[in-house]
Length: 201
Image 1 (cartoon, helix red, strand yellow):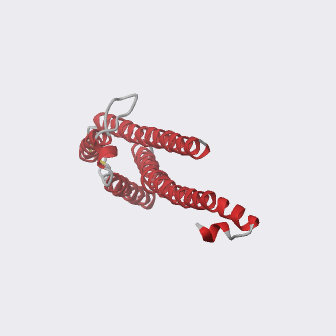
Image 2 (tube, rainbow, N blue to C red; image 1 turned 135 degrees about the horizontal axis):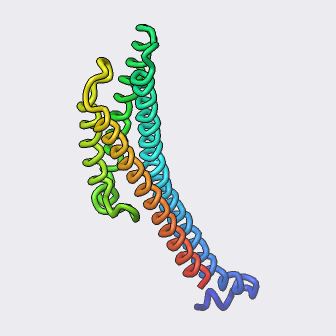
Image 3 (tube, rainbow, N blue to C red; image 1 turned 180 degrees about the horizontal axis):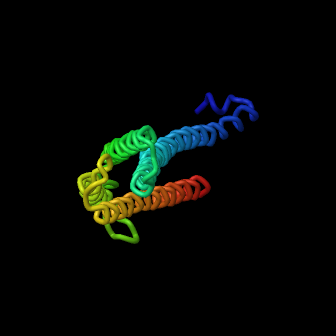
């Protein structure tokens, strides 16, 4: 205590600022760590899960529709040359293959978050990504097996119905991912607001 008594007044006053400075530094460190945590959550939610998976599913839907258009041209246009037919058949097969591959990639990515895959439901259909993927797989398999695009034989009406149903499941999957991103965004905003109130308080 005698040491403090012997200090000049200016130095004694500076000692009063040290506890506040320590608290301020601690608050800054906690804030930086928390912001880094928020950044990691945001990247995981928006890019790794929502954006990447949604992009794959939307590209699969585009390929699916392109396959439909190629096949439709084959079915409706009897004046096609053999080379034109083969070109359309090749395009159909490539697009159909990409549909399956991209949906599987998206689902494999989503499965890393079990709650997202098995629990979160669409507000419209009340179904999960897991049930939508299961139904999509069934309809896609039916779509492929119900009609022979090369020989133009089979149940074309059932083929088109399976196509429509499979695309409905694709749309439902994108809706769930959009709702998930929106909900997670709200949660992050609430967390940031709560931390801000604590820091201000």
